Length: 350
Image (tube, rainbow, N blue to C red; front, top):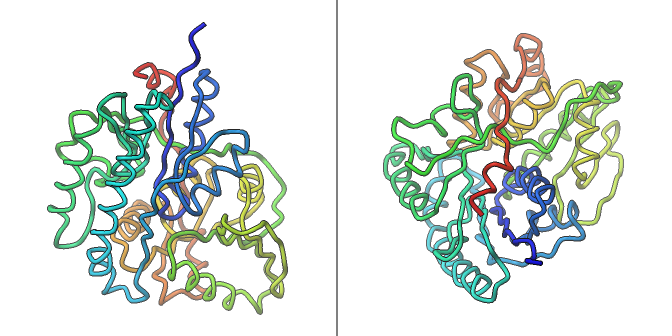
């Protein structure tokens, strides 16, 4: 009897969103009787190993992306890091080709890892950014990204093709690559009617130092209130621990089941406007306040887009105060507008 094919699933370690949106894909692969090999680095790999302790894994070279403390230096710092990113992509390409040659991999799903592909097996690339916003260099960055996408057999965009959609111009440029397939919004969560146990849920993630800067800002802001606050730090590379900071309950990280329950049982979510977070909150139909990462064009665009549509308000990090929460009831909150594509049909290409 022929053994089941093994699919390599490799998310980028840039925040936790790339890893978490791979969770429903991994589950669908396992349900379709594929074997799964997980590959990543850092916090993303730690998270997936917590979620799937029985699955084999490989460690890939880290892109080691960091943000500037100052918004106006964001683009310059990203440009300075590009040689290191390209070097890591070249190293991971070499590793992946070796695994394919050794018969360890029969198909590839790369979530934004530039070098995780092979000409010998079907390789799919997941991204919601067909247009890469970078200010005055958006045209150049988008063109370069499309050149990378064309090297894959397929580009899977986790969004709805028709309006209303979640990614806007990011995932719906005038001319998407010919290998693009819209696979519907991805979320590891399901909406459940649970008693509200927290007034506010703070979700932290993303590269340093901005993750810590937002943590310090929010903990200080809520320290002297009588609100029930739960703060999830998003530190999957540390042991799980819980402790109190005044009236605030702090957890280093949560598994998917724990976080699903926490969001469903919270009145309002405060978080970055990362795309995976947006998909998760839409699936759970939660109201939120977004604080985009300073200088990150994608998050700033998504926050402004959703605010203009009357769905979720946002506030810039340097202007955050508790009064900003008063805007939330004026917005309708997020919802998924369309049915999700059956992932199992996509797997037939493998």
